[in-house]
Image 1: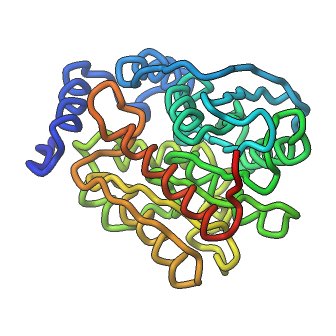
Image 2: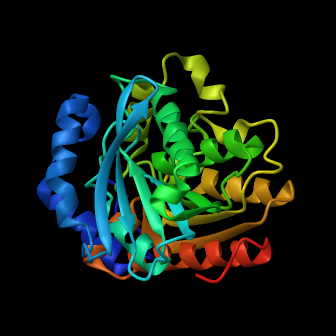
Image 3: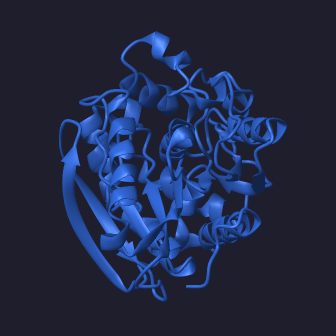
Amino acid sequence: MTISPSPLLDPEARHVLDLGRQAAAKPFEAGSPQEARHAYEQGFPTLQGEREPVASLTERTIAGTSGPLTLRIYRGLGASAHGAPALLYLHGGGWVIGNLDSHDEICRWFANMAACVVVCPDYRLAPEHKFPAAIEDCRVALAFMQSAVDDLGVDAKRIAVAGDSAGGNLATVLSLLARENKNPPTAQLLFYPNTDASQTADSYCRFAEGFGLTAATMAWFRDHYVTHAGDIDDWRVSPLKAASLAGVAPAFVAIAGHDILADEGEAYAKRLEDEGVPAALRRWNGQIHGFVSMGRHGPAARQAVSAAVGAWRGFDLAFGNAQAD
């Protein structure tokens, strides 16, 4: 079935969809995870924005729960050498695709815009490593940041988490898991997060096909990630199903208006507010899923990162975490 894109789409989103149709690539679910990764790695450079310079970029390998875990560490221009704010960025890709390069430009933007240190882990992917392997790796990365503050030159009380799509899912779960930490994350910055793996929200019907990420592809991602159907109701897969969100870090939630994940992202933000957690919801009504990774084709990507940084600073000021750098 072919669905014509909405006339309300932003021109940049329409252009990206046109490029996808011209490429005529087979959907991820028509092949293997390895084929999907190869196709994604071939395609994302045509979408990414400028990889702007940062003050420094290094990679480090730390001990994970089941082997070594590689981290890419960015120090932004203007970041303080000591006590800088820090961000753990978790890349998207449906828990199956994505790597340290696929979201490199977003990490650079965050590092420079927030004058902070960004740590991005190369967490394990499904189906080779199913739930909860990715979460375990993200917990290890956060624990490393909290234990190596002097080495990294960051403030343990000014660490936030962020992510897009499946990475947004991991960021929400990590924020919930870390509520009892000595220094829990001070903010969660989420771009079109996956919060309900049951995939029954109405936006799955409204945007099932024709808007980039399809309902069929999202089901393929999820089914590679979970071990069995019962995992779908586990709040560590579907954080919207958590018994309580109270006490979690304040959130910035960016929504693409033409996205199968739109409704569950909005539902998560509303539930946070209902349970007393500050939540800044921003909608890019004319955009599609993944638009923050499409900086080559328009300004919306950088605008969303800038809005996330602004919200983060606002949370820090509101809750007394900010200090002179």
